[in-house]
Length: 505
Image 1 (cartoon, one colour):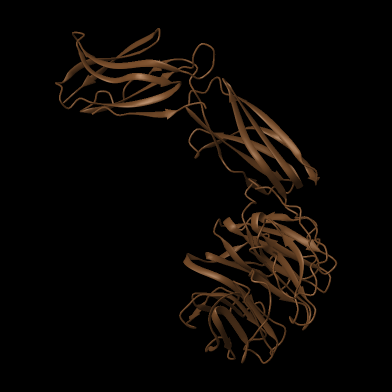
Image 2 (cartoon, rainbow, N blue to C red):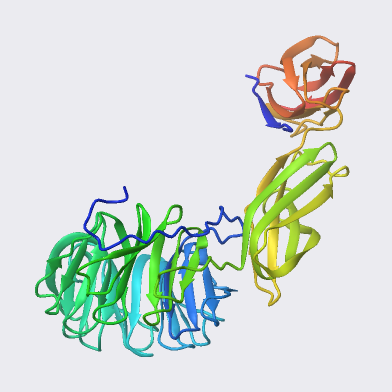
């Protein structure tokens, strides 16, 4: 059986009695390709200047100026990070899909505490030693996370945890549970429901939010939970700065809502049409931040009445390649840049080994769109397929890789390769290349590839059809033939080439 395969070619809002609607549409980033389009799932600030956001593929960014600019941090993992918690500007932890890590220098370096296949959703510490973490179970530590003890709460999944002191805390997810003994025992306060976040101002007053407009409030420490009338949104995060003033963010549609009367009424502050929001954090009544999909981070300094643009280190909006004969043109654009030293262009033949082939200097810090180009001469490259990526480098040495783009290259001439293996028994592979038409444009040509014995008798026809420019591979099975020398011949237009192969049984 002869099989030929192609290797490459060129080629209503809502109808509810809210007090008022203030609609504000954010500047929306296009899909970034530098590694920062991944969602930011959680954020935390320890004061009005120092904060962190974490998310997909181990992404962490830190700000020391209240979110005006962000520095990328190497988390030492590519796993999804779902929760971050710092007790001061130096000591903090994060957890996620099979990963728990700790930093003692503000996130500049991370020490992995747990690396397995479990899933951790939320982490919370009271001090540098005592902390808790939830997923399908509860995990406690009394030595800063070096060792963890597992506790069973109930069947289900828990998305968030909060403690007020060493003894009193709540977890929420498929239900709400409270502990008064540091997590050794738990009392169910609310039957299973899809809860995404929980927030207590003090031992009595708290709220939970979830899917389909789920908001509940307690004024007695969770003994009873009262329903709060609100739009049927998907709520992701809730934060209060005192007993009256708080915010909720979410998606479907994407929004930010605020209350000034302890949740009795909610005001729609921002209606965000594109990116879902996963987390919010407020320093006081005026300064706050939200984070979410596609690496967005926004800041308000007026209590949420208006929100600043997202602040990403470098937001790459496009990365494409064009090929013309022996030249590959790379073109990419950025929407914003912060601390951008430049882009190193890398090329690979197999997506494993990469070589730096050029560099384009960045614009440092700018909010204006920028365009970049680079031309790669591939006249001396015989590979049928090339891969390119960008290595975006900050002035501090931090870097991020772009997505990988693939280029299929049509051959500039005909060729017939030596079969492999040779000698063979009983099968072998034959590769050949069909050039573009003389005009330089892709077209189809009639191609034959036949096998002959030493007397010139035709033994087999492997290819007998029109083919477009490109490289191909076909298999020849000689199990029915005797050992000996055979010849295979490629014909395409005026091109004819013959090679010898040996069948050895």
